[in-house]
Image (cartoon, rainbow, N blue to C red; front, side, top):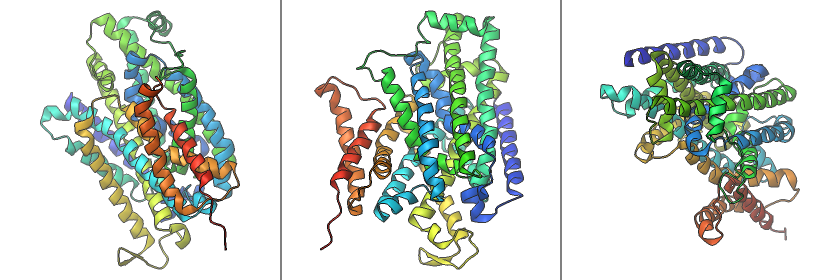
Length: 493
């Protein structure tokens, strides 16, 4: 079985490199292809690929496994995603296209100043590096537990292999390649979930309505938690889903860079709204998968693992060799989709917001620039930055290994709540007020706000009998907004 899985992994990787070669043959080359894909990406391709990029390994693993503990309480958050996507399409995309941005944090420089631009970019780098590396870690972890550990291979070896492959196929064309490989990865993610559900239904001789009826009788398809004090109260979930989408997609260079490769604003808006509707359907499939995993275990006596992230793979591997292979292909697709766009976006953000590529031209064929005391072309600088972020990515994955003891979806959203909150406050202040701020204070505000929220999250259960969930993101953004109101610029003498 292990050798079959390895061969599938190699075949899928070869398919990715074929897509890279085909996508890189025509159109923009060099840095223009890497950063903007020549702004020629077909919007249906971007919309479909965005599903895989949004799902990642966390949704693939944690959402089905989380049904056992939290039923379908994730669904109101998915409905909130649609509201968030609508806000992106109607508010943020027109701004980005009007300013002709490549890095979306260039807006903060135009609105507030250089300190704000670098603060926003740094918070994105921190959040994406941690969040996406943890998503990738989950993929490496599962493949290691179910395949490589039996061969006595250390955990860091598959991690190095994954990062090296992603680095190679994004090294030349960057976002131009990612737009097309995301489409492939979305297909395999959905295929793995559907194939597992079908295999379970066949094994139990049940139909989808019968499966949902059994799950409903046991309460596992319950969507709305009506306790206002509960962390997963339905209204909090809807609001959290909306603002998580606005921040983790609309204020996220990784997700928006793909949207900004569309030919026009109208195409980008069609892409966003289409992907939001597809996202509802796909998440329902994954929640049905979670219900199917539970019913299968109850009907057959299969003992589910204590760790939520292991439930899906343990059942998939126990069903048949086919479902095990399809699961691995889905996991590999999830791993690649978690990292390829992020690695490209991290490179883009650093090159534009810290090295000023937008002020020097981005084709890499112009005059040399000084980088770490050496004269280098912009193309060489971009490649060096890309490799450096790949190494950082790898270090985070390996360093997290001793700390994995819970469902990663909660950890990732906690990280997002603290790191994207200042971005939410900055963009809200810039878009909905005309006030100026003292740009020098912005970095301090962006650090103080998450610290206050962290103290509130720890103390709220004791002080108020209230437990913060994902809405900590809203509090973080609100505190940032209020502190920006107080940070007025000095009056000229």
